[in-house]
Amino acid sequence: GCRAHRSAGGALVANVLRNGSVLLQWGLRHWGPPPPRPAAALRGFALNCSWDGTYTRFPCDSVELGAACRDYLLAEAHGSVRYRLCLQPRYAPPRPAPPAQCVEFRVEPAAMRDIVVAMTAVGGSICVMLVFICLLVAYITENLMSPALARGGSAAAA
Image (cartoon, rainbow, N blue to C red; front, side, top):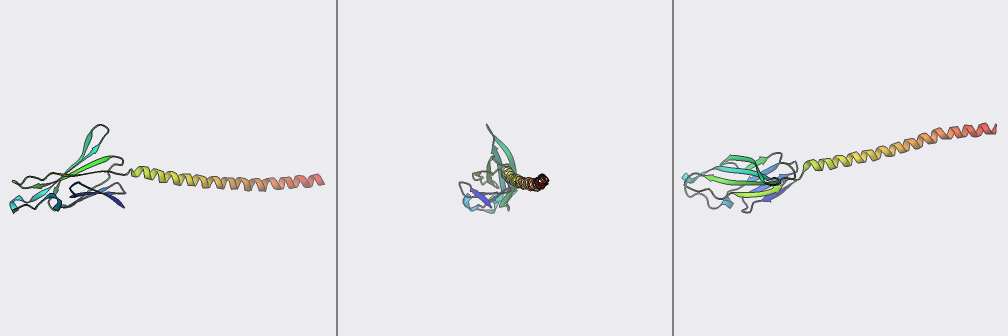
């Protein structure tokens, strides 16, 4: 499963996967008309990434991608951090580059989810062990105390 976040212009989609990776996908139709002549052909894409800190925004990645690229995998994004990814097509002169399209998202903290699952499993195991210990104590008490009382009772009768 994943959650999709779309840029305001609709050209860029960030698919946030459960394993903490982010798959970016994009198309050109939302960036305006195609170039009028081959000289103004698409050269590639510039992808810039940043994330919000407590007081400032930090850069995390800046990548130049080829003209044929339509997706990019950002592996191992950190949980509980707000990311901003901006993608801008690069054209040959004289055509100016259209404005970048940006998408913002937050990755669910996978580590916290794993800790909750682990603690639940450990808590369940501890409960099962306590039940077994109580049953064992009851069994030992029943089997050790009964013969002693029975012997004590028969000795008093003799």
